[in-house]
Length: 374
Image 1 (tube, one colour):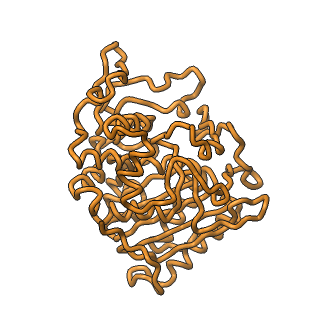
Image 2 (cartoon, rainbow, N blue to C red):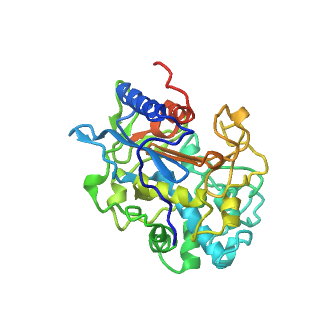
Image 3 (cartoon, one colour):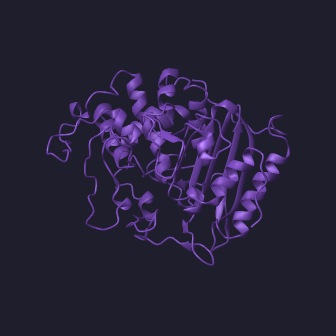
């Protein structure tokens, strides 16, 4: 199969003059100097050519270990588009129907609506997070209505849907999820460092949590709220080394920035031998019926990632149709097909690297703005 061309070259694209590298360097340096980040790997590809790459800061602050380009990061929700693509490969093979009730394959999974009726859930609703499921860490107390089914398809709610999707993939493919993802996605794309278990511990950066006066090392079982007033996500940094841990489709993988860029570039270029163009277009189409994502005006959700509907409302220089998502351990990425752009930024600092100022500054630097003064 034809794989994306991602070889670095001297100079930069004419549409991104030499200051591009300086702008991005300045954003990364400022985040490190202000101790908002501990370490990062940043890649920018334009029309299939790598025009910026850097590893900066520290993989482990306490030992002084520098960040490496081949660092293997805990991916958290960066796993969602990978697993979503695996499901769509099954659709392309005619083995899975996006709009048929998943009870055909998972008869034991039958959430019920508030009135007691069983909910009809489809793979499309799982992929677009409109299945009426939930995430406990968004709730305000330990006794909240975790994963209580609403009426699927009428609202958007970030949820465990991708983990259910993982179970669906296992059932349809007839193998454990790690094997299915390897055979359907990571193997064909040559994503050799991406999987559900990190085998090279020395390449895995230490995770940190934003704190004052500097980020603190993430502790095993530490719960860190994404939104103030919620119970937070309980983290297990050690889990990625446990081969017996169940393969979480929504948050359980590890991999390199280079591997993930290969996936994004395959999709940006139309799917290649992995997916037909029509399915890539379906991924990139807002599936919410015009609903905005929470705290993201002008942004909807496709099949595995967010889709920018209205750049003006979002206050973004990105073009309409731009794909974007992140990962709770400190990652962000976006694809602007109109500009031929794929950008990956993996860090070891949550949540600055996922939703902090660094993410906005990096985006603006890619599009031509110098970083604002502190």
